[in-house]
Length: 139
Image (tube, rainbow, N blue to C red; front, side):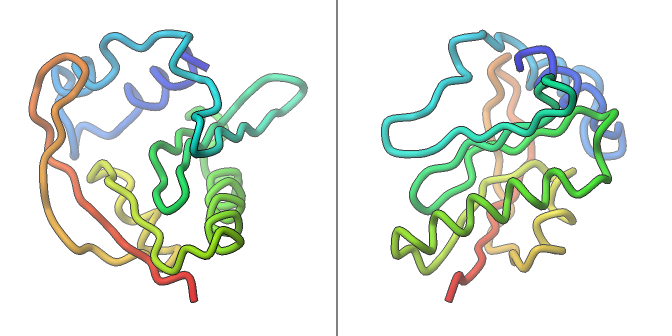
């Protein structure tokens, strides 16, 4: 999954983030980061027994959703996001949140999320990257 995560980050369009920014974003990925959190879920999608996507989410927030570039555009991300939102609804959450990269904003907006704030995020490599916070009512 570490390789998938890095591939997805590095495949992000240069229209959103420079090569230096993408390398800083992907810096320091470790295998032990891909475990189920105590208060959330870590879901994966597999094709031929190979993980091609993952979604990490808590009770009211999508923490990360990454799809291998070779498998993007096939509905895998939408399915993982829908599963996360269903779990949030079942837990009584009425507002789903995500702090997302600019490159993924359109994906979330297609799924009913709306921008609430332009902000920044400090990458693992130490660069400050532009990002966006989005919310979606789950009612």
